[in-house]
Amino acid sequence: MDYSQLLLLGAIAGFTIFLGLPFAILQNLSARKKGFLNAFAIGILVFLIIDVFSHAWESAEESATDALAGKVPLGDATLNFLALFGGLALGLLGLTWYEGRFMNKKGVLTKGISGKQVEDDFKELQYAQKQQHQQPLLLHQTNAYKIAMMIAIGIGTHNFSEGLAIGQSYVSGAVSLAVLLIIGFGAHNATEGFGIAGPLTGLNKKPNIKFIILLGLIGGGPTFVGTLVGSLWASTVASVLFLSIAGGALIYVSMLMYNTGKLQTTNSVLMTGIFFGLVMGFITDLMISLSGA
Image (tube, rainbow, N blue to C red; front, side):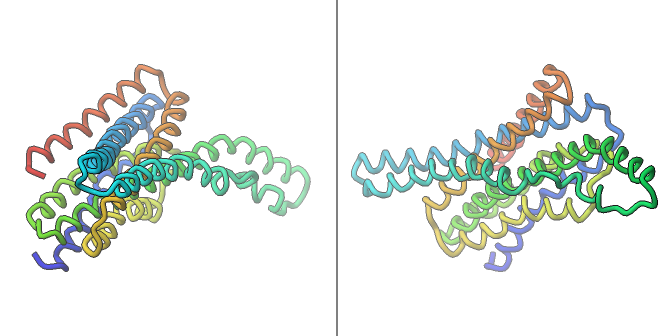
C-alpha cells in the first residue's frame, strides 16, 4: 500500500460517519420515539467516553510504569499526564467557555421582529404575537442544532486521534495493522453518525443537506487529517492529548443531551435508550476486536 492509498483509505474511514447522519431528517416522530433516539445517541457517546479514556489512560499509565522501572525519563511520563488532564480540561471546560461566549447570544431568536415594516399597528401586533408564539419552537430547534454541532466537534476530535493511530501504524512499518485500523474505525464511525443525528430527529423543520454535510465533515474529516499528521510525526503525547480532549468534549455534550432528554420523555424510556446505545457501542467494538483490529 502506497502513501496515496493510505490517505484515501483514511478519508473513507472517516466519512463512513455519513451512513448514520440521514437519520437526522426523520420527521413526524412522537415525543417518546424522539426521546428514545436521543437517549440511544447518548448511549453511543457514553461508550465512546469509556473507549477514549481507556486508551488515553493506558498510554499514560504505561509511561508511568516505564518511568518507575527506569526505562524512560520521568519527564516523559509527566508530560503524558499533563496531556491527559490538560486535554480533559480543554475538552470539558473549553466547550463550556465556548458555549457561554459564542453560542448563547441573547436576542438572536427575536431579531427581525421590530425590523419588519408593517402597514399599520394592527399588523405589527399580529406579527409580534406570531413570533412570540413561535419562539419556543425556534429555541428548541436552535438547541438541537447547537447540540448536534457540539457532538460533531467532540467526535471529530476523537476521530483525529484515531487517524493519528492509523498514520503512526503506517509510518512505523505496520501496514497490515494500519489497514485493520482503517476497517475497524470505519465501521465504528458509521455508528457515530447516529450520535450526531440523534438531537435532530423529529424537528418540525428538518435540517437541510448543507448542515448535515457540514456535520459529517466536522465529525469525520479529522480522521483523514489525523492520518496525514500521524504518518508524518509519531507522538504518544499528541495521541493522549487529543484522546482526552475528545473525552472531555463528549462528556459535555452527553450531559447536554441528557438534560434535553429528561424534558422529552420518561426516565424509563431514557434509560432504555441509553442501554441500547451502550450495547451497540460495545458490540461494534467487539466486532472490531474479533476482526483483529
